[in-house]
Amino acid sequence: MTDTELAANHDSTGNQAGAELAQKLSAWPGLLNRVDKSWYPALSTVSDEIIAAMSYASQGDYLPAEDDVFRALSLPLDKVRVLIVGQDPYPTPGHAMGLSFSTHPAATGAPPRSLANIYQELAADTGHAVTADGDLRPWHEQGVLLLNRVLTVAPGQAGSHRKQGWESVTEAILRALPAENLVAILWGKQAQECEKFLDCPAITSPHPSPLSARRGFFGSRPFSRANQYLTDQGCQPIDWQL
Image (cartoon, rainbow, N blue to C red; front, side, top):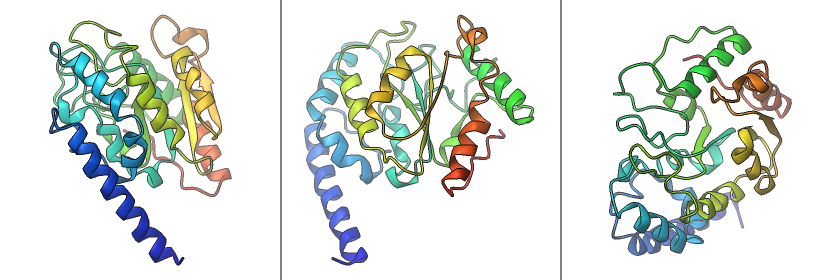
């Protein structure tokens, strides 16, 4: 089979999986709006878990908005170069936007404390002073998969949607990632538990939370180390400057 035929077969498989998945998830018509079709086969294997997690979330208000829940997967699978795993969305209304550690472009005020510590380490690691808000879309657009382990949260209640199905969903997403031309950045115990689902190199350190950042996150140089992995594999490094 030629490369063209393989691509056409992959597109057909993705389109079929997407149609079936959309039908199963019809109770949430916006849920797949941002998802690139390359992720449909992986998500199709955990459709029941998605339904369970969204059914639980839908018992009350939840964050982020429905069409932002899978926003990280707007990045095509074959474009992922770096993975950064978060815990769950920010519980502050107006902050969560579907990318781990990122805040909504319209969010006002200082960035959350974990993100402020990420910015501090970014400046120390790369020499780039961070003058941006909390919007990490420039990283996402370059191939950084900013994926939370749990994809929804109740407003004001951090961790409220854990163990309701999302962990199985994100495991399927992580297992779909390639072994080559990719490096993972895993901050904290929960993220590091995901390493067993990955075949790529991983950079680990404590979480950037104020509770643990001084126990080894500061000084861990994750951004320059990730770029070194990429260049060693012949890949274009990430421009981390914001």
